View 1 (tube, helix red, strand yellow):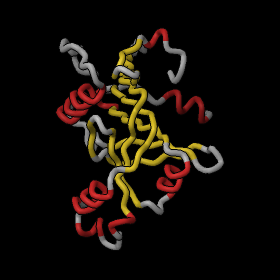
View 2 (spheres, rainbow, N blue to C red):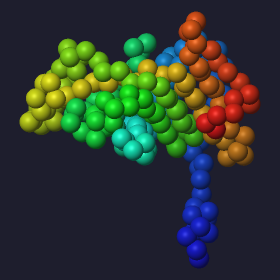
View 3 (cartoon, rainbow, N blue to C red):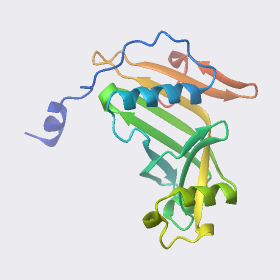
View 4 (cartoon, rainbow, N blue to C red):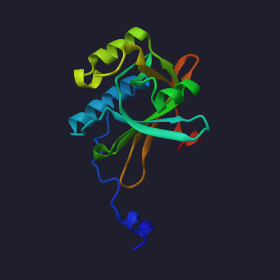
Length: 189
């Protein structure tokens, strides 16, 4: 069997989507994300706060790594790491990124993209202080950074075994958030 045939033989979208939520969609994506991540945890998804962060290097080549979401709010979607890391260097040179959350047990994914800003030195120090002693060992306070991805687009994807997936897309406008119709959006499907 070829690799392609073998890969196609592996079942996909085997999770169980939650019942259709009758609650109205919130005006901001942060509220819907909080609802979804809590539902994922309630359904037994482990480490639902884990995400893939994508950046680009100095040559414009994409780079991705898995990390933990530290906070979420109007200031942005927070994550942290050493300033001297590849992630830190890439964000210093090109302060934009994308986050992707994938919860296969509930057939849901969330995509977040936008500019990245460095949090205050106080917020970065507080994040470092919240880590375990072992995780803090050898890290100088100024060497640890809390970043916030300030999204301009957030997509919520609800998978379906029949491939009739549902998408809810939020786009930032000058007036706040606007939900857009995925059928009319040509980019990033």
